[in-house]
Length: 131
Length: 132
Image 1 (spheres, rainbow over the protein chains, first blue to last red):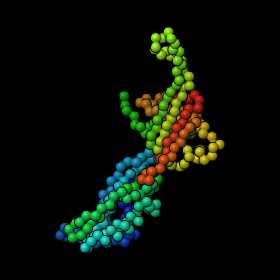
Image 2 (cartoon, each protein chain N blue to C red):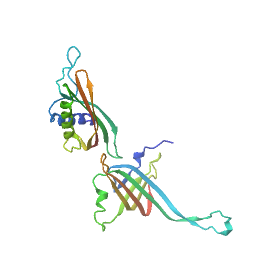
Image 3 (cartoon, rainbow over the protein chains, first blue to last red):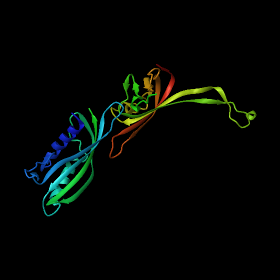
């Protein structure tokens, strides 16, 4: 299994425990709008850089986790982002098929307004080594 | 002349590469014999001979397996390692694999809050060596 698939699968599995529906690709309505359920979590871009040794393959990655919600304030989404932090930050309880997770930490977090709602984006950095 | 990749500078113990290695360096050296005197008009003069010919291997990388760390678990554990080979990659591939006994003279472990546990190790040649 490739590192990108392993990371995506691991994040989906871990974030499903948080509560809101988790998307890799948000469902699209016939008119081009979003059919996504709110609130929801989406696995966004995952950027990989090499973290090899002489004899082993490794990856240093940053995964962007999106949280989208609708409401009058940030409370709903902030609670979800806190739950994601509790689940992922420094966790050792994550299975990445074919790889060992050395480290997973939250690097950045912010919230922005979108049409009719809010979007929170958190970046989690991880180190992986192939088994 | 072809350029060689850095990962080809392999350091092995009994044919097995040191795990987790990310940087390897081999330094050869010797001590000269200074025979300068007042007759040399302030210019250093060296004897056409030398002493203390040696090499030093410095290696660093991701700590994995704890093999080198285990050697420091007790002061009495020998740091003398036999059957060490290192490869200085050349285009011909001839005479570039060195074999020697070494002494592990230094070992550092570093951990940062947002990184992996890393190591640095220094090996000093313990006698003569061969190349094949």
